Amino acid sequence: MPNNQFKKSELYGFITGKASTAIARRLQKNFKQSSVDITIEQWSVLYHLWKEDGMSQQALCGATFRDKPSITRLVDNLEKLKLVKRVASKDDRRINMIYLTPEALQLQDRTMEIANRTLNEALLGVTNGQIETAKEVLQQVYENLK
Image: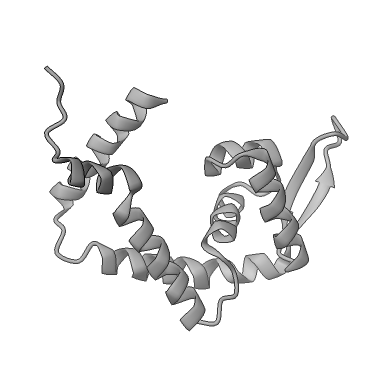
């Protein structure tokens, strides 16, 4: 027996990621109010580079769940903002490695604080147990569909 106990209207909201969209919108608003002039998409690329500087564009595709043209556009725009630089791989010049600039490193603490504040705002009134259950359920959905 299928385990789809949603009403169709609830399923649509679940599939479209209303909560995820709301968090992204609020984070963008909080960035703007704090005079941080980057998009959420750009921030997600920077976030992964803060964890591991010098990733290839292909690795960024996998880390951010974006396709090659999207990552190329994001990296192009981050280069224009002087937040990243492309460097040809020493092993294979067809591969671009993406490195953070000092300006991007200066944004890290500030944007992470804004992101944490936004997430705390989103999770107000949600218990740790509820968070763990949600993570387990969403991880299982992801595993089922990957």
